Image 1 (cartoon, rainbow, N blue to C red):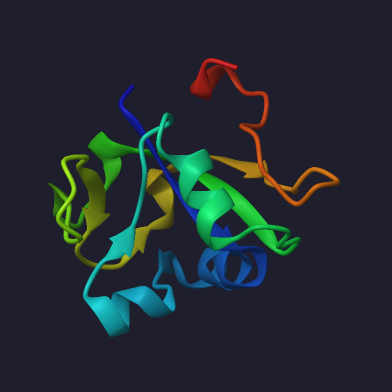
Image 2 (image 1 turned 135 degrees about the horizontal axis):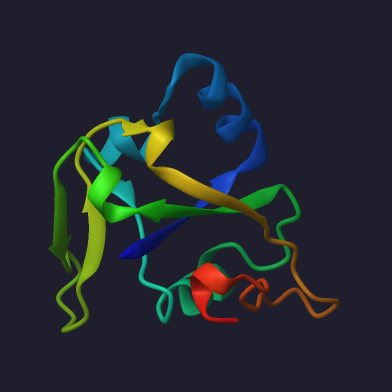
Length: 117
């Protein structure tokens, strides 16, 4: 299984479950849903979400995503990130992992066989 990850606000994810699709604010403002590979998500979390306690980590089976996924870097770097270019069907989410920061505010990968941890 080819898993990509998305850091989500718990409340936004919970609302998505009743509608069947997940559409965070970035989909409207930027035209896509930001995702990461397993090796990319912790640097992203520590740079953008440090010390946030209202988050979950969505593990998404890339093959189940109905919208187009583009691997791209829009900030000029060499590293490509998966971007979902439409609403995410909740059936593509294979696991919702607790994503709490450590005491110093930084994140680490939660334990999960899906993530190899």
